[in-house]
Every structure is written in C-alpha cells, then in structure tokens.
Image (cartoon, rainbow, N blue to C red; front, side, top):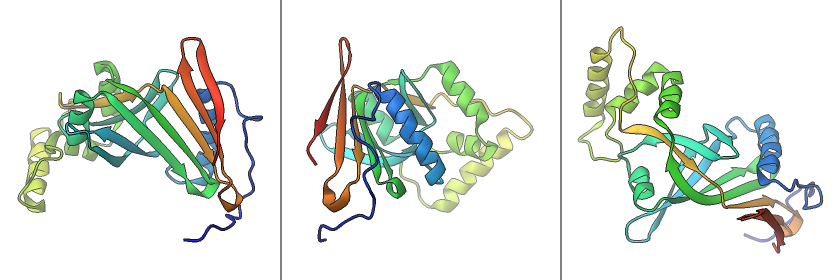
Length: 207
C-alpha cells in the first residue's frame, strides 16, 4: 500500500493537549461518541504463559482516574492470562477521526459490589448467557449451548439472576498513554504520557 494523503487535516498537537492524560482521553472520547456508533470498543492484549501475546475486542464499561473497566468471565482465556500476568494493553481506534489511543498498565479485579451492580444492569438475556457459558471451553455444537441457555432460563424463571462467581470486572490502571492523530502522508502526531512519582511526564514521538 502506497503512502498517500489521508484527507484529514491535523487538528491536535501537544500545544492543545491537557497535561492530564485522563482529561485528554475524556476530550477524545467525547468526540468519538459523536462520530461512531460504538466508541467503547477497544482491543485488549494479554500475555499467555509462554510469553505469547493475544488480543481481542472488548467493551469499555467505565473509566475514571483509577482506570478503565471491562467485564468478562473469570474462567475464560483472557482472565486466566490476566490472573497469571496481571498487566494489559488497551487500544481504541476511532477511524472517522483518524485517532487511536494506546493504554498500558497493571490490572486488578473490580470489587464484588462493582461487579454486582454492573451485572444487575445488564439485559436478562446477557445475564443468562453469562451463567450458561463456560467461556473459552470446547463444546460439541451450538445446539448444546442453546440447551444450556434454556436450562438457565428455566432455573431462574420469575427470579432475579444473581451474578455468578465466575463473572466480573477487570480494571486496567494506566501507567502509559499514547495519543495518535493521523496526519497527511503519514506525518502523524504522537504524544506519550508516562506515570511518574510526581504525576505524569509528557513527550512527543516522531511518526
């Protein structure tokens, strides 16, 4: 693929960026909410027991100065890798804006209260699926899984579905941000923030 102009004019650089990466992320996320149907979609990268990386798309369900939260099955591959090596990388790519944000840092499980509250807010069908699925484990066919779903629906008919112990949240606490703005002819803007004992350092990277 040949290098060419993107048609997007640079509209951001370190001069206009906030000193706090969380504030800057909030600005970018607000713009993404206006431009995309699913700005919360993010790639999550983990490291397996042999040092091999793996990635998949997950959904951001909350963020603040403590970190970025997503929810999943604690017995699936991603959670097992996070439990063994509690570090992760996230990446948001907002193509209509020509922007991406990369985040790296350690992970911790969310509290029971936080996981309970989010689980209770989910559609009932999603709650049923979380109980029925042994995530990442082999299964004979789709019909078998559909039977598992039907069994859970029958078991909790007319009842509140409690959050299963194997399901909950993870929080990625950033130590590193990179904000990337697409530029004409691949002359991109890249601004990095790194956590220090005194706050955040900031530097520009070459494209």
